[in-house]
Amino acid sequence: MNRGNKRLRNALLDILTIMLLGLVLLPIIWVFIASIRPDADIMSRSPIPMQITFDHFAEIFARGDFLVALRNSLIVGSLVAVCTVLIAVPAAYSLSRFTYLGRDLIGFLILATQMLPAVAVLVPLVVIIRSLGLANTLTALTFTHLALGLPIAVWMLKGYIDAVPRELEEAAVIDGSSQLGAMVRITLPLIRPAVVAVGTFAFVLSWGEFLLALALITSAEVKTLPLALQTLFDPYSFSWGVVMAGGVVIAAPTVVLFLLFRNQLVGGLTAGGIKG
Image 1 (spheres, one colour):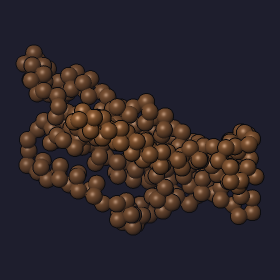
Image 2 (cartoon, rainbow, N blue to C red):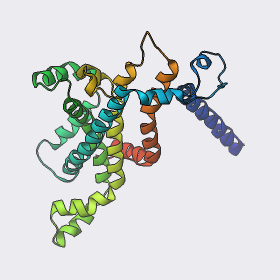
Image 3 (cartoon, rainbow, N blue to C red):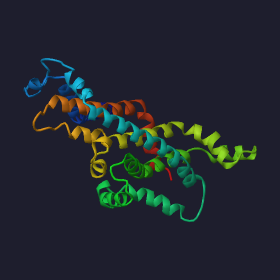
Image 4 (cartoon, helix red, strand yellow):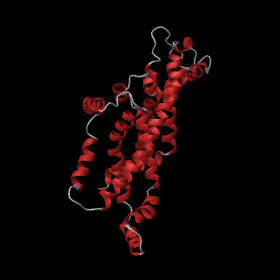
């Protein structure tokens, strides 16, 4: 009887999980299907497309402003990912391995920054960036995305480094290696999946960020993809198919990256929440 109840409970949980997954994926699936349907077919009530067309994607990639925005997003996202890894690795190693005055306070502040929504620091950031003369530049966008993504990156890597036995580094030091050499030769290869996860996470956060980009960027030459997608809502020549195709183009890299590195991402978040 207990075994039967357990099977029934597991079956009910599986059904509930599938239903919740369907609710989450339904808008994404609808966007993709709408991107390959003619505009007249999109407005029909039929969930099944009567025709399939890729004209919307052709129109998207024929737009010069969209290609410029794609280039800008790739530049900013790549720079943010690389810089996040280069800064977060030594910062996380310091918090994990060294004992010094203020270390616990720094760790607390890193966690505390995650409790603040981006809108809470939006006005100070805009004022500071404009006072520095960096408004309407990819440099400003890169630094703001880097500053907002670093805390979670440091905490994720700290969890992974905490899981690496100190004895491995101590043995390397005894053999003549420096502390920095032990980190590079011993710890860094062991946390390589976490480093990949952090870089991926930083790229995804920068790639889809809209609020800060909207506040800092007004020039068409430095707009990113989320801002370019906003320009597709033209009241004089509006096309749902083109908008949905733009949404698919923006979502595709993040979906691919999450599918490739989903294990590292989940593991990094779990380790960062349990350790330290």
